[in-house]
Image 1 (cartoon, rainbow, N blue to C red):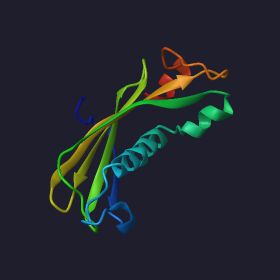
Image 2: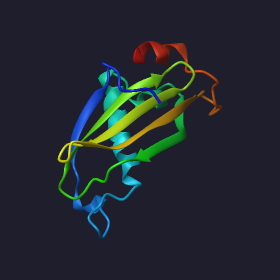
Image 3: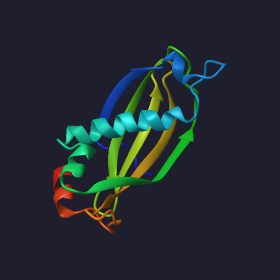
Image 4: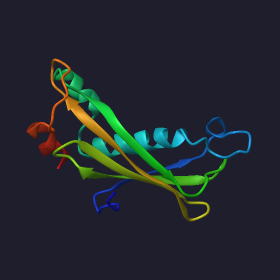
Length: 136
């Protein structure tokens, strides 16, 4: 995994009660929701939304996700999701980190990899040139 780049996008959030378990700690699966929020913000910062692909008959699928948890988030704490592109030519690989702003510690680090589909729903081996250009 690469480190955040100068082109990263940040989204600041607060831990809501519905995201925590009985110990008031964020349930581990919610970090993927936070990654999705960051991924959407990053793509939109490039004037691109995954819904745009559907209009052209294409689409994307998540083919890999990874998240390393390093420090808990608790109910009411503020946190930041930072997202950046690690690769866009072979697959759309988006790195993310979740930083606990209340405790000033990283809570998670990971990535999500999207593969593009053609208009027949077949997996493409590379990201189409028009998408690469929009994401640069």
